[in-house]
Length: 385
Image 1 (cartoon, rainbow, N blue to C red):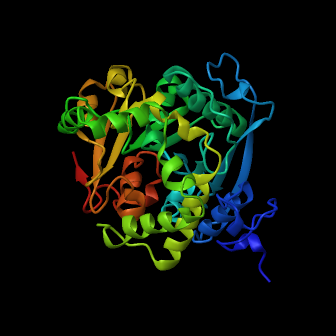
Image 2 (image 1 turned 45 degrees about the horizontal axis):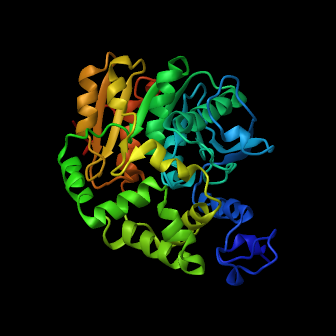
Image 3 (image 1 turned 60 degrees about the vertical axis):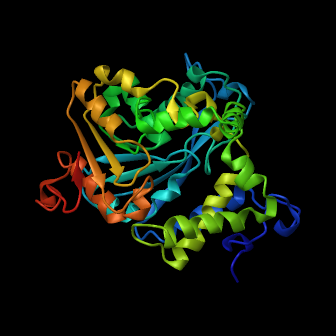
């Protein structure tokens, strides 16, 4: 008979109350169980580990290590390539997400790379320290220092770094600080590059002038995160609303490859448990971005100091503006290309996984062995901006 933790509606082994009697029916054990179920969809074998990153990194500005006496760990999965000398691809998720959202990409990418995906500090199955950062500098250090300690613990020196959305912001900042470790940078719908002079910024400025805009802006500046309302605030009704989101976002209103019913069930369960667990990394929101996801320290301002060749990947219908990447490219002293994936939005790796995988392989063509051939030299359907 299956263990109770193997079922999406199971009771957490470490909790005394049945989930039906708890306001937020989740636990650390259930996050792990939901991750395991979701990754059962991946055919490639993997190793899951909790990489200890210790306490205070030398010279760190971050306050995450002072919030308790417990050591920190980063939840990590590694998918090994069967090819000798395969390049290492490190994947970093975005805001409100975890590494499991790349479940549709692992098989294709692991046939060419040693793929390592992480849950950033404060998200997914990683440690969730009390978030006591009080500035943009401290918040950046929270992510950058914990990632660097993870890299040291994993003894990684040369790798391709891929980051999505907030993960793209973190990956770009990391490459600016530690270019000696990053062979190539892939930024997928990255935050931090949207120019505040575009049309969306003008619309946002007008919205802020309304009473609704002032209310939303006040909630944002008060660090009232979406999870507080949409997940934790709804208590036992949370799973229902998350299920409605997944079936709508990747179902009838999706313009890409629809999820199967089984994929939808497992992804919904995984998203719910990772969202409603203790608030930690998500509290970076108002320190890193102003309302509208405009970075308080825009990466556009650092383009002239870029040291790592970079590929930007956007969904064709991505709400992140790829024109910011075009603007940055003008100032970058290193090779830079921009690829748009058709039939995909901000989560194109779920909506059009084959298109996304092709874009990643094309971006890394100089690192892949010769037996790849010409299949990925000019992938069909991708748009070059």
